[in-house]
Structure formats: structure tokens, C-alpha cells
Amino acid sequence: MQRRIALRGCEASWVQWVGRKGIYRGGGSRHHKGGKTIMKKRMVVAFLVAIFCLFVLGLAFAYEVSEVMNGGTIEGRVRLSGSPPPPKIIGVGQDREVCGEVQKSYEIEGKKGGVKNVLVMILEIGKGKDFDFPEAVLGQKECMFEPHIVLASPGKLMLASSDPIPHNIHTKSIMNPPINITLNRLKRKSSLSVTFPEIIDVKCDLHGWMKGYIVVAEHPYYAITTDDGSFQLREVPPGTYELEVWHAKLGSQTKEVTVKAGRKTVIEFTY
Image (cartoon, helix red, strand yellow):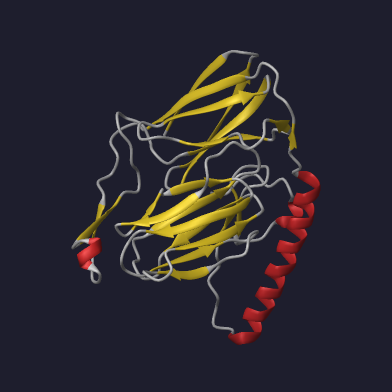
């Protein structure tokens, strides 16, 4: 999803913004047939852009943890206008004893007219409560990433597999170090260091339908919608904010929301 760019110096054709403040979405340009020299030049440029962005992010995106006195709550739901498309049926060529003969790939999921797996975040909030996310674990179960989108605070993210077959975890990122590791019966757990705000693409190269996302949050006012599209943000300092929702297929929307002390504010988005 391409967003308004707050840091003009971080512009690059393969860098997309998710959120004006701090959330990068790594693109990925295709290399032309120019040989190793072109690839090396692009790698150097990518490295320099990343270093510059890290420097500017450190200056611009400081979030201050402070006690929230009589904060409010933002409660809402993300709805879908119309019916979701049917899932794609993917034939399984290997590991059928675990993965089954077919896999269903849902681009849009949800119940009761809601949209599941939508990222919700407040943009440009400078201070508030400390991170209170549950431990971030990206699992692999029955040949799927579980959850499809995992929300993580800066630090370490746990990686785990409960399947008796090998899976790899291959990430694509700009701000955080990418990894490509294999989990199997002998090594069921690992970890990933995540420091900078970013949406990280995740896939398993061994099973092409396995895809997911890691959201490294800039601050604790993030949420992922549940099965019926609902979400809640608690202990929000009173004030007026811009609230953004993002879905991997449907894109993004923003709305202004005003939070009053000790009150609940209800908001709704429709795709």
C-alpha cells in the first residue's frame, strides 16, 4: 500500500509506506538483465537508503511512555460491502499427510459481514501507555501461518512450528534484518529480532500458499480485527487523532476520531 511519505529522503521505488509515521512496507523491484554490477549498485543504494531512514526514524519517531490519566477507548468494526470472494483452491503436491490434498487461500475473511485480519493503528501519537501486547509468536500449524498477521512490539519475536514436516520462514523487509531459516522436528523454535516499525512479509518457500505478515508496532495503539471485524484500543490519551485501517488485499482507509476522557468512542469502516 502506498502512503503519503513523511520522510522525503526515504523515497525509493521499492519502499512503500503503511502509515505516515514509521511503518514501512517493503516492496521488491525486479532486477533487469544487467549482470552483477547492476545488482551490486542496487544493493549499495538500498543499504544507504536504509541507513539514512534508520537515522531519520531515530530522530522523528520517538514515542514517550507516560501515565495515561482518565484515558478513553476507541471501539469499532471493519465491514465489507457485499460478499467476500470465494477462496482459491490450491492443489498440494507434497507433504499431503500433513497439509491435505488441497489448501484454501482466503484473500478476504470474516464473519457476520466483518473483515478479519485488518491492521488498525493511530497515526502520529507522541506519548501514552507502555506496550501491553501479548507475547508475539508466529506459528506454523497444519501448513499455515498462525496467526496470519502477528502484532509485535520492538524486541524479539518467537517462531514456532507444530508440524512434523520441515517449513522455512523467509522474511522480506527493509528496516529489520531479513531471515530465511528452516524449522523441523529437530528444531521447532527460533526467534527474530525486530527493532524498527515495519510490516514484514513472511512466506514458506517449501509450501507456496503459506504467507503471512509481521507488524512491528511503533507504539501500543495498534490492533488486529477479530473474526467479525471488531477491534478495541484502550487507554488512549484524550485528543483528536487520525485512525488508519489496512488490509493486505483491500488497502487502507483513514478517519478522524476524537477521544474524550473516560469515554468510549465508536467508529466504523467499510470496504
